[in-house]
Amino acid sequence: MRDVVLSARNIVFSFGDSPEQRIIDGVSFDARKNEFVSLIGPSGCGKSTLLRILAGLIDPVSGEVLYNGKRLDKPTSELSFVFQDFALLPWLTNIENVEMGLDPKIGDEEKRSRALATLKKMGLENVADYYPNALSGGMKQRVGIARAIISNPHVLLMDEPFSSLDELTANALRGDVVYMLRNKDISVNSVIMVTHNVEEAVEMSDRIIVLTNKPTKVKQEIKLGMKYPRNRHDKEFINMVDRIYEVLTRK
Image (cartoon, rainbow, N blue to C red; front, side):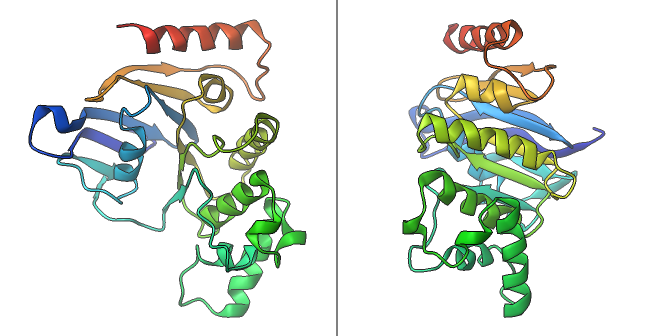
């Protein structure tokens, strides 16, 4: 299909042979160029596992992941991952953590230059040589995002990237991320995010994939035609949130 970047095709995953151990049961969807897709569903339904399968970090039992039409069965630098818990190494400075996203064959001078430029995009150039423990949660996640985008990936996979932040910090960072990812200076042109937060999904997404409880299937795909930036107090926003809650809770 035209403009499709990443595709899940009938993904099945299980922790064992019995039906009770099946986690994901035939999930299929596409992520297109210049599209922000959110995966939302009940706690424990396998959203994070599905995201890792899309990244090539876990092999499905059956089905396949296609990247630009070709089977993806191992990690690639063109897909990058943002973790829920920041995943920063505390014994490295912030700039050293960001440099880890680059090919180790790149020279030290070029690494530092590119890492500084990426931290600047995240508003963190002044804390480049600090250690992560000197930063707030929101700043740590910015470092995590900087590390994810420094290799110029085309797809960004985000696993509940704001869930460990207080709501005020998370709200500010959501807006920054939406703005940044729609900036032409950034290589990322497709985002898939796992979230439990319906309001967050409506605020950020072009399309929302609602998943069932495990064994997980696609319950419904919802396309959002709302303009950015989105106001949580607008009637259209509130109605969309209500619609998604209704789909989530419908048996």
